Length: 427
Image (cartoon, rainbow, N blue to C red; front, side, top):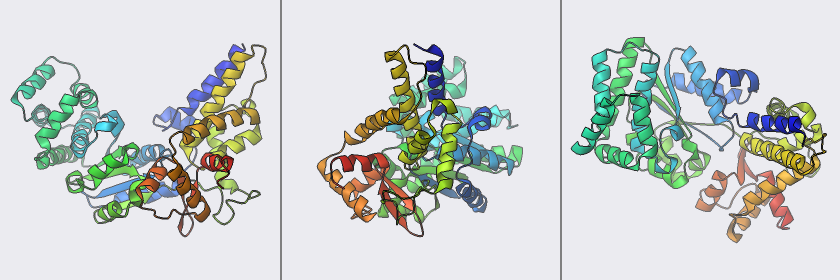
């Protein structure tokens, strides 16, 4: 086997793992200008907020929100805000997220960032706040936490690990604050006030990856507990799934209390030509996503036309482009293993066909007959029969259906799903 070539495809695959871009080194090497208008809209919306205002950021999963939010955090720091940016996935088991542990995470991350940056908050205030984190409804559990804190180690690592991994800790926090959300809010506000007093900067919290939650979990958080979630008197940006803002009831709730900003999917075709076999794509859009691959896969490892086809098969969703790229790298490594004399392997049409088949089948497995009918209707009409229907929202959340914008909203299928329906002769 050609070990050098195998390693180059492995490196390309690892490069494709680098989403979102968080470190300055990753940004320097791999960043492609993307979503500039949305970034500007977010900056303007944040600066226009009251000091306790809230903002919702949404878009399809994997469309580049996290990388954009990282850039937003950097820009807001330059504009004089104290920014705490974190992923809820790094704080809480995703299946266990609720409004209580979101607020608890905000408090923990704010104090952690202030401590990390050596913000000169008086020791008495810091000690008081750390003591508060050990207070729970159960005296026995409180004593246990105090004992663990007393054993030394990193305070924030201890509590973050408990929040991530211990059901008993999350349940204790929920029982402690479920009827005392005002106590949680009070301490978040106290931490923020201490930061502002020490730095002269207003606080902004950015919470990523809430858009990856199941829709039922999101409904419980943003519909049933919206007042509690929005109660801290600081600026907070929340991410949510795009399907939520297509649910009429939930959107009405959100519209009444905050502004919603959408990161649209990169559009390759105008609606009026998208289903024509000889349609010409919008070259600027294609070039943007091509640049994403070109920065991660060396040019001699991929045929230029194949690279272009990969971009078009992504439907304009970065996550799907990454999945295709990684699957192509995997297929190339497999070919090298099967043929040790192979010294010219590259990502070509045959490799892309194999990768396309694998990902298409991943989309096919969960689908039932009713969903095929709904997908067919959406394809033909560029809209579902009912945009608020739960089955349609699930398809939107799962990237089977993609939302695009002209002057009006319209919907189309993910290209791999379109391919699936064509193979079944449904369209």
